[in-house]
Length: 404
Image 1: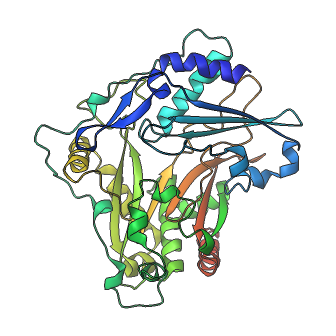
Image 2 (image 1 turned 30 degrees about the vertical axis):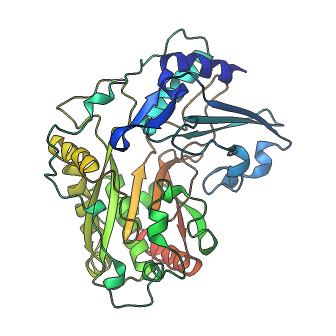
């Protein structure tokens, strides 16, 4: 198979991905380049891709377990394969490419760089157009780690201190109901199939040019990302009905490849070059103000990510032992719509859709959504309890109604 051959060739250049991670002194993660390889699975589905329906192959995908099967011993961090790739062929000739990666090795941009290399080598190239750069020593803590910036995403905003009892996230702190702190100790907590599984419904929402323009009209000085994130944050907060005095966070993942100047990351660097930045306000201020208020907060949080901020959060990771980010009262949004997962061509044409298919509580991935006549849409999938999801949808309809 061409993809398998391309993968084998790509791993020559990206050889650390064929190794295994072990834990060194003080919990430091180290790659043992032992060449044990990645997991590659070939599967067949006795149905045509079109029979699944277009909505079934976008998040939340009901066939995710079949299209990306978890093999025993493959989903850990230490001494486990760093990549699992599954190619599922459909009876119509189409195929689905499922990839699960160890996120300690690379971020979304690093992954798409690797996938593009596989694509190029599968089609006959002798070397990838972008050569991979390891150089992880560029992003290390300073000799004397010093936290110089505010990092709200790691602060404890305890919902139990609020007074309203009809509060979903406050109820989660009741130990007899669910032990959130225990779940938070799981490094894969956001992606755990167990967290609140039976309490949530998962739905995707599409935003075409009309809806995006209606949102941007409410905060004309904002980017599409800032306006859409502000809209989602406000609608979700209204739906959750927290105590008005509760501290509400929105955390964004910021790509530092173009922001970091000292040291400047070289083209081809495929490690994790993202940092989180959070903004915080009260539920009352967030819900009572127009979304331009939230968009301004998001813009300010994004703009504060500079060299000093990156060094501060790197030092924080060392001094606090890689702490978990805040879960409750926090909404994490990451934009992967421009990475190009829906553009990768292995020689048979571009995919119908591509991106992250995990849908979990507290996280929103912004994905590309291209229609026949609208190629600049966005899609986001969320997980919320049924009643709260209904309220969220109602609020979203109000926000995306064209302004008169």
